[in-house]
Image (cartoon, rainbow, N blue to C red; front, top):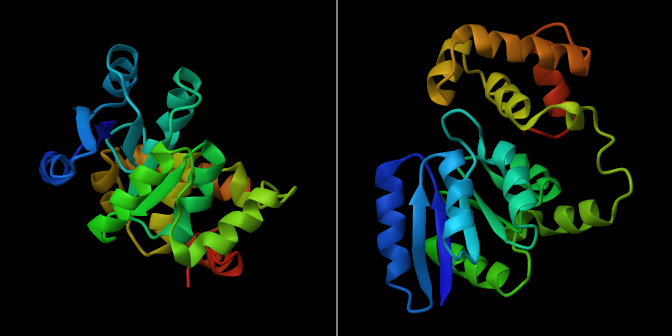
Amino acid sequence: MVSILLVDDHTIFRDGLKRLLHEENDLHVAAETADAGEALLCLRTTPIDVVLLDINMKGRSGLDILPSIKAERPALPVIILSMYPAETYALRALDAGASGYIAKDMDFHELITCIRRVAAGSKYFPAEILDRVLRHSRSDDAEEAPQAKLSSREFEIMMLIVKGQRLTDIGTQLFLSVKTVSTYRSRIMQKLNLGNNAELVQYALRHKLID
């Protein structure tokens, strides 16, 4: 039986996913939480075989807390659940220590396959980016791209900006104040040596972060 820790701050999604997982004879949601700190506490008190970790949560994002999870349990496989396409975040998840990446609009059966494979010690990433994952894993200069300087939250905000979202909308989505989002934007521009949103969009296109 594979014991799962489900970390997601959307109660309805968490409840629905838990019901589906419990229909599988070999899978069991042993603990669930919407909070990063509680997730770490669960790892200390509950036997867990796989973590399902949402990327977009209140406060710290999934990619922000992933290093803490790996520090607590280095061998524990973590699957990132995301509303973002794999092309955008999967390589960053891999670098942060994730064993798998599943977009939330993927077929449920693909998630089941992913859980079983990572529980058995393998990695699982969507077929459409598997070649990129393999090349990235072998590359000695995987971290040389300028966007590698960005924190997980900065990268997340950058992607929302280049997709045309306003700072107020980003703040609402990420549960941050507009002032905090603006501060993140300034850091992004400084780290990437860019001057405005138009240059940021051109940068994202040039580095194939968006189509």
